[in-house]
Image 1 (cartoon, helix red, strand yellow):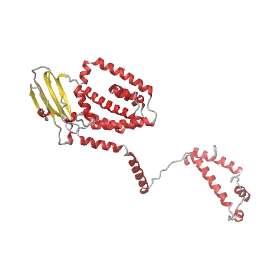
Image 2 (cartoon, rainbow, N blue to C red):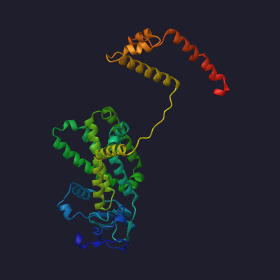
Image 3 (cartoon, one colour):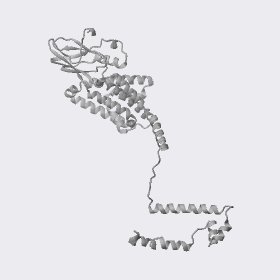
Image 4 (cartoon, helix red, strand yellow):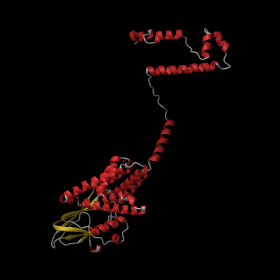
Length: 387
């Protein structure tokens, strides 16, 4: 079949025919931002069985520009199209041109093609949100043992080839060979999963036992292998997992947006945010410093407890007495003048030499007046006028 003879599909097209023909939906060149998460749905219904065959005789299949395009072409060539009387094709309106042909199982049949736009594809939006979430929490998730076990189990179920390749990594001598195999297994697994998601309902209703058996057996062995190796302990492995999650988040963001320009802008913003916390910290510190310079500090009044008051009083009293001793020991201190004015010069001399500034009689009198059971405390407790 030649692409030039295929009929072009447009939005709101409604085609009824009985001829097996090919159709193409061309890329929309005019970008409208209200259709960021929109998709085109081509619904084909018929009274009889038919199959959809994607046309791979295109330039990007003969000369693929990317590995993903090559994998798509190979799988489209070898993928056995299913037969049904109702098939819905989801097309990105701003993506590559999609061409397919409708082939009947019987010679005579009628079918109808209805092209409609889904303005808000919630699946697409959820993929975008998941990518943004994974980008911001990649560092936290890479250090979580729960995420390690759960993601390892899911990886083993959905991408068995990637999981097995990680297990036999030590037996591959060259890193270049390992990464080449990893890229191939990764893209192949992603595309196979996408193809299986389209046939998920059919797989569940027709092969429910096999699907459950595969998920339980492969999931169990994947968890056992992850549990045997244990969670990531060294910083290098955690850093590798973090950057893998960040790269995966960029893929999800790109796949979750219909408009490529918006996807590129979102990817640039996410990549900038990975190192944005450093200038933000510096900016916050400078703003805090400037605020301290130009704003007066509010006085915070804190009330002391009885024990804190006694401790501070003792400390300040001892400090003041020690400072007084140092002042009295200076050569220029007028000692004779001070002694001539004191009632107890000997007590003052003992104090300067390091003795106590209180006599035992004075200490005993103070305890009787202000200690427990003293006159001052009784007056405070039992005299209403002082309360």
